[in-house]
Length: 283
Image 1: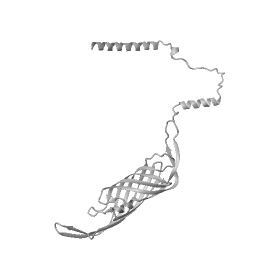
Image 2: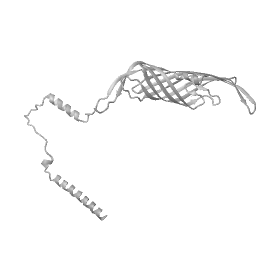
Image 3: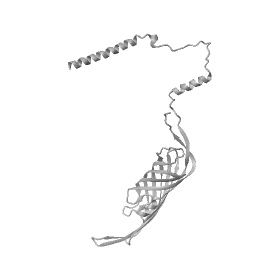
């Protein structure tokens, strides 16, 4: 330990001595050497012989060496904007899984800016369901949704119209339904109850969270899919006799509903949208 401390003290003293010696040398440098004068004076009669062309080149070089040397102006170009009309063909596949219901859905969106799209959807539903002679249900109605989409896709070409988007919708439906007759049996008490539920009109409100993709398969012709989570805000239907299907929403007994769509759409170009794309700051 004694040897270690001795070596440590010796190293510390050596470093201190070197530092002090360097400081002394720095302070003993003559002032004329430390701060050489770079100021030059011209006689009042002397003329500047620099040509305007050389001076312009010098000023340009000075600018390039300044803080704006790496700044490149952003790229701005015009892209097509218009109305895109589409049909949700996934509604027709529901006939295979739920043959008692028919749905037709039409979609439209319009480009409001570089990344923002306004979206609207409207549709119709008809439901007719019966179980032998014990239950008979009929209902029909319409619905509409309105909302906005945000496009996350970075475009590689000025003419590219593909979209990877997320959005939100507000939905409203009006539905009329009735149960013309029903028969309920109780095996324990051996009783049978017959009745009906009169024609009733209800309204429903919900919100949708949307995520999807649209790809331009041909010029102005788009194919797209989307997934949606629908959350019921309010339904005027009675809990004892809810509708089988709420148009545009789904099951009348669920407070939330997951849905998928597949659309074919066509865009009608009507105007141009200014698109601003920051370039890379590197040369």
